[in-house]
Length: 188
Length: 188
Image (cartoon, rainbow over all chains, first blue to last red; front, side, top):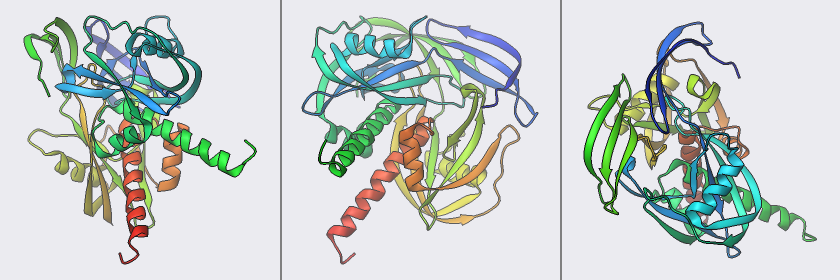
């Protein structure tokens, strides 16, 4: 991928989580433009499946969305942390779960026009339950749904959170391809 | 959905597209917290399918993502505009297309922890080609891919843009359910 050349960067806000800058950049077309860029450390989200193929979904209050959303256990990457460590930490803190088996479901850009956030997605199986450790600012309920119902909710619009939609759809495609492979090879 | 009560809002940045504020809010738990909130007007994105079930994908340079991404025709809602008008306008400007048939694919929250952006998703068929009208700041190539290949790219990670992933997966589920309905009722 071709990187842009940043000609000038004016930091306009430095918060706890995000930094906002006006960036004058040289595009691949050699044209100059000024962009509003929200820099974010990135995050990780986890599709945690139990032995009955039920998925852990959190019912979580989000001020920026004006209400309660269904979300995968997820959170932002802490300084110096790798995304896979973030995934394990957030699964433990938010859902009270640890997992023996991890499948990498790839990454997504939340809103690449203005926002640098990249979320790394995982599927986790072989779960062990422990006590969650919700942060005081978090309003979270833990729920378990059949994966088939969660996928229906992705399509009918009950689920609207982007990382949750992408994680569930990719996990559904992974599970369907695993079933297809087993059907092709009855010796499995 | 329960709305939060905003106790105080300090605007820290007002840009062309986004506004950034520090907001002190009262959560449903009656706890007070301060949040960094990026306000965005929202957007619309379109899964445009031709008569051979090929989908229009744009190869677009995104400074915030550090390179070129595959994206649906999409854009932000202009002041006073409805999301369905945005969808039609962006499909014409970015892809050079108008459409006779529109299917509502619901909405998504790009990153509801800090970002208010909601994207309305649509499927468009019955296409007519016209000349696109790319903005000078846009670096865009127009491509057409079989829908099945686009869905494979959603799952294998070639496509990473959230709205594009969610739009394609929801359109894929819609098309699969339409095929299933036709198989149930051979009179269709």
